[in-house]
Image (tube, rainbow, N blue to C red):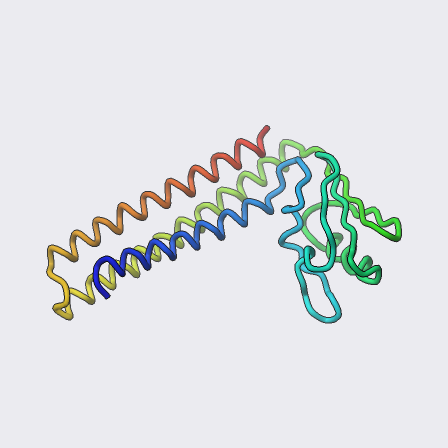
Length: 185
């Protein structure tokens, strides 16, 4: 691998880590109803654990409620069971055709817990990026030992890798701060 390929590979992997973090943020509760709140839920669909979007349509008619309309009527009970067993803290209201979830306003303690969860998730994303940097630096060292790269090129590559890490850490911080602000509103 040459210096460009090492850097490109690391950037692609850091982008994936950032995407995982973005998806974690989508499922974090903010006090407003959103279909993404249910993305992490898995429903038993004929013996297979499927995402809720595969078995039902999820809509938000207003800022405080979610309506789940299953594609098959017999999956209603499974969806209700998945919601009750989740850590969302929402009580499903089943009328036989659709499930309605009312999203109550969050207390200060709940908001603080969610902010702590966001910070923990942000730190995990940063650690993932740091591990990618470590792997990239190892590739530079290996290339220099194999005499396919000079010491100067290795050092320049490591400096670029550090800059890339800082860029992605700043992106993670920006996303986390925006989500924290949204939760504390």
